[in-house]
Amino acid sequence: MIWQPFLPYNALIVRYNEIGTKGRNRLAFEEALGESLQRVLSPVGKLKILNEHGRLFLLPEYKQHFTAEDIQLMRDVLPTVPGLSSLSPGFYTEPTLEAIEAVMVQWFDTVFEAFMAQSPRPALTYAMRARRADKKFPMTTDELERYFAKQIISAHPELSIDLKKANLLVEVEIRYHQAFISFERIYGAGGLPVGTAGGVLALLSGGFDSPVACFQMMRRGCSVDYVTFHSEPYTPPEYIHKITSIARQLNNYQPRGRLVAVNLLPAQKEIRDKCRSRYRTILYRRFMLRIANRLAKLFGSKAIVTGENLGQVASQTLDNMAVIENASDMLVLRPLLTFEKLETVAIAEKIGTFNISAQNIPDSCTVFAPDDPATSARLDFILFEEKALDVEGLVKQCLESAVIINPDTDAQHLLKDLPVGDRRFTI
Ligand code: ATP
Ligand code: MG
Image (cartoon, rainbow, N blue to C red; front, top):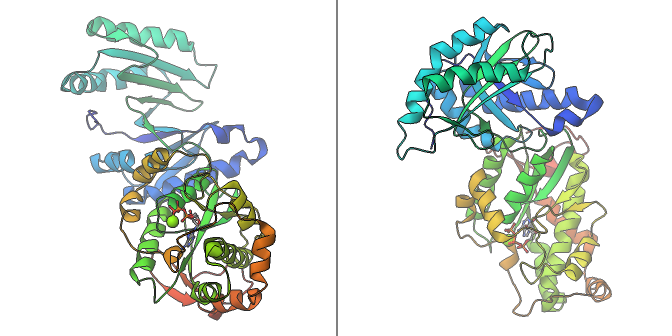
């Protein structure tokens, strides 16, 4: 529950952990984070970004202060921004004790009243924290903390100090050219800003896992394109709509991810007719990976990502994963390998894909699914089965049907109509 009152905050302070450790690349990381924030906060209007030694400050460019809606938007969207550890709206002022004190005198009581008006009332714990980048400031952080804590405690003796888990937090940062005072922290997703680790291509399907796998990769700095496999007319057109909605939702966390939809049916029919039924799922997956490899090369992706999880379903044993991966020339990453289902579901809820994934629409893998899937396939058996297939011809045939979809606009094009080999092509 947010109990914070609305105050006319004139700036945001942005804190990040990991990108602070990146040495020479640091500027690129900070720029990527700034771009992410500009994008998700675009309804707030243009923001001026100041890069201040390990912190970013964002100031509204065309207004005196943020509005109540702006602050609410920040609380809603910032917890999922990769690269951001925390952020506070607050007051940006002169780096002098007088200026800081003026802000405290003007606003602390309003914050305190709102704090006390909560019901049920939380433990009345309080912390005053100060940080100082500019060591020339005449007071040390200790002195600053004591100075303000003393004033606050004497005015409000019911507060008790708890530096570890205070319910009421007052923070002062002394920077080189300004000071910043805040009363609220909004936590981000941590990790690294999107776009700093290169591009990957994710196999996106209708379940809960693969969207979460995509988000986990974004949180490590990757930008993600998506490929999905359908089996029209055996799978309904709603399947593609569902995947497009998932991709659109995921694109809230990155600038732009493209979706490719490929009809796997030509390969599935041949597999059904020519191979042993218990190997179908594995053979489908090997085709998916081969096709994904071609697309990844086209997009310049550095790896393929799946939502696979060790032991969750019959096909996801170490033996099967190894046999499936053997069809890929490219690195295959499985960010959810060790996740508990509950952890995955909690993230799916947080990033807004849970409700879309929950729609029950059949996907490609259920088409001609065998009753007796192999749980530990051997590569030599699988290679033997594939001798009955024209693998390269089927890959080409499936790719003929591939459409590229811009999830944000729903624009679609046949992939083969686009200039092949141009990594930067857009739709
Ligand atoms: P998900 O919840 O992501 O559907 P799952 O737990 O259902 O995964 P599987 O169906 O075994 O597991 O799929 C494992 C992974 O293979 C998926 O997470 C996804 O990355 C990929 N995959 C499976 N089916 C498809 C498909 N039709 N299109 C694209 N990728 C797929
Ligand atoms: Mg699935």
